[in-house]
Length: 171
Image 1: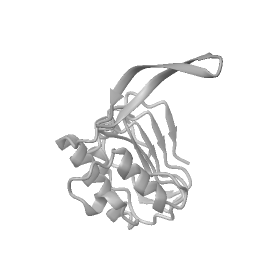
Image 2 (image 1 turned 180 degrees about the vertical axis):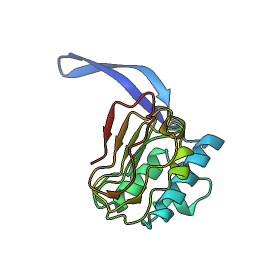
Image 3 (image 1 turned 45 degrees about the horizontal axis):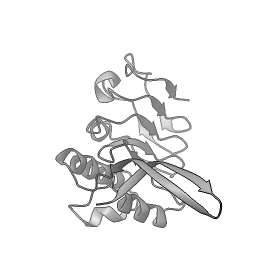
Image 4 (image 1 turned 30 degrees about the vertical axis):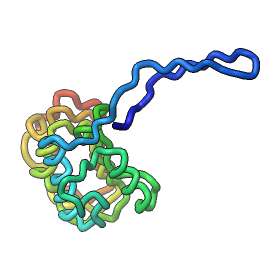
């Protein structure tokens, strides 16, 4: 089992030191059905956007929120980071950042709706087309940031925005 150390306290005495480790929390490397659904949805989003699939896509049992999966994805990324982040328990995707990826298709709102813990969605600086569809309160119940600027989206701004939305940039 892998352990994350949240607090490390070092007390220095001369040439030596005493370390006290506290609040060790196990990392969740197992995949719950919700995690697996999130990972499968992320793969479907990548396919819809015609993006290169992340390395975890080759393993049906891989937890895309695990440290190993995110590290492998960051090694093949142009930016040295992943396009997604997960919650503090490493079990659910809560952030997707796909800005400036030259994506030139519509937005698969129905796929994003499956990510019910999504808090941050950045799709700006692409060539996305189509409209924002549906009631965003239902599509994104936990969304706090939605950035869609510099795309080719059409239609009206949505009437109903997510209840937790703090940042919405459309133009």
